[in-house]
Image (cartoon, rainbow, N blue to C red; front, top):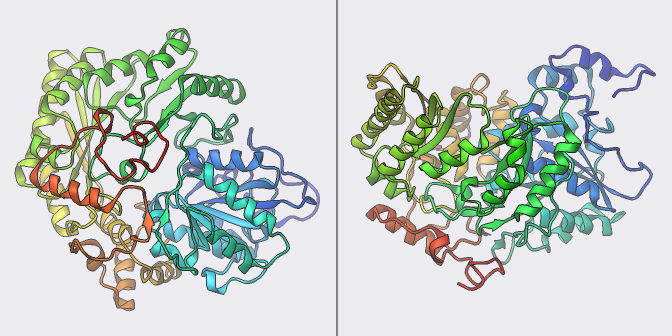
Length: 594
């Protein structure tokens, strides 16, 4: 906590803002700062969103804990200040500080961002500006931190490339130690020498040094042998996901064609039940949390789940702990598994059919049949749950009116099944606009324009005739801006900077997002946003992310696109190799012997 001695201006700042606990640090598990006199690489992990969101992100906790274990580095944290805190810092002339030592962010050797979501990009500039670090790499001087970024956005990096010194493409558990070691070995040398050294590390992209071959995504092949966090920072205030988080595997075998994570996180690598159980037991003892989230893209597919249920069965039955799944597969098996995990029936279950008809689900390779959906709903209400939440998308390639009408049919079926089981049967539907993403089979497709997207959302919402069903849809304007940056190039950096200068912050938050301001920025800069979001790309076009090799080949993506347009389903990778590009390139089981 802040010292009682002296006239520290930060005390007055914290007294003037809401939720000062976002900025004070001192949480259980945050760990002491290593000796300030030691020759360490000091890293400040900067999350481009508010504290409550950043503290819920498992990857952030993993990298923080990993860096703390390195003998040549130390880690601290900072989160995007809420607007009241930003104003207080500016009016007092105080630099943004890290939570652990209260050291100004500008005094760190490295500032590391995670690029999780396109609508967080302006927040990166807020952090840099409040730290008084020049926005653009070309303007930084000796003494300025090296600005590094990772996460999904690093695989389509160009819109942010002028602001980032180096992108880490792939698993941080592998890349972070190598990057920080390289910087440590060059302590006392010039900033330019350090960045050039980073460019020679496989999996690192330095925009100011154009690579002579595609930058290959690095992966951790054996998850039991790499770092996983045995401690977690326990917040002093409520956060979005207030629980222990444990990753059980990386990747996904299902091959949904719209899903960027399912493509760029390949191949699947599982942790053993013994490793996960040991981590859960240790974190339960150290943190005081009683709920554990078992995280992955599809936790119900984890082959070791049965072992975990055996290990923690008695604790579940006695209500000592609760295991939760972030997402359920749409089938009865997953619901039955959830029933074993949920010792107290509260609330409802969440499923993502994604599309209203079998034809549309085949196009996106969802691998869910009408029978699967009905079986999942039967199991849900027969096990005692009272309501369900369903996620769908609109604006998918080849979408027709009957695909949207199919959403109503699924909702009505859910209400009917609930009534038969004498359940309340409330159905909540969340409808999101489809955004084509880089490194997916749909990366060449046009995004639906925002006016048509709004019309379709209104049609689905207004034409449901069942009072048990409530439907909401994501704002098409936010979806549109996300789509602009999802497949953008370096020219969009000017738009990010100009929009930030005009006041854009927290664009993922509807109360702050200003669509008219964004459109005015594009117009003033002579940028056509439709050419990024709503234009179909030719199949031979050089794409802004072609210099990043995700591991999945363009030939596979083209083949999957063709199968999508033909309505053909591709099998799950666990049933046999589909030759996505990873075969023979890794020692991971199922790929090395493909």
